[in-house]
Structures are given as C-alpha cells and as structure tokens.
Amino acid sequence: MQLIPMLRKVGKILNPLPPVGGIHIDDASIRILFINEEGKSTNASLRLPPGIVENGRVKDSKNLTGDLEDLHKKYFP
Image 1 (spheres, rainbow, N blue to C red):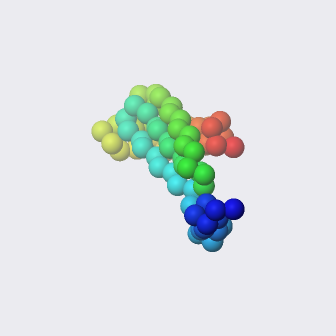
Image 2: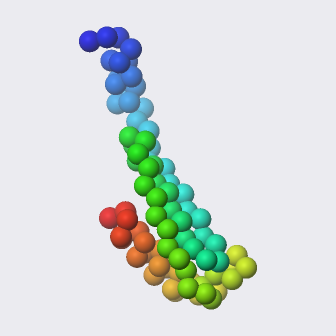
C-alpha cells in the first residue's frame, strides 16, 4: 500500500468530516442542503403557500413547522 493513500485513510478515521446542512426560508419557498460525511450533497425545496411567511417574517408558524417536518421526512428520513 502506498503511503499517501494510507495516511489519507487514517486521517479520515481519526478526523472524519461531520455532516453539514443549511436551510433557507423566504416568502415563497423552503430550501435545504445537506452534505454527508463522504461529501455527497442532497438538496430539496418546497414552495410555500402565500401567507406563511410575509416580508421575511413568519406569519403562520404552525403550517411552517408542518411543511418543514414534511420536507425533512420526504428527503431526509
């Protein structure tokens, strides 16, 4: 086994990359991005009905929470 690939393997074991994610919510949609430990990314989005978020402020937290839960269950089980 070559030294450099072996050291990279050991480095991944000793210092693994953590999963990372982000979420963006605006008046019209929710967008989620998730990057797993291997660097593979998954993204999803959901169009929001009018009135849930207006001018950047949450107006209907109950429905927003439900939409976030649905999006999470569908794409990130």
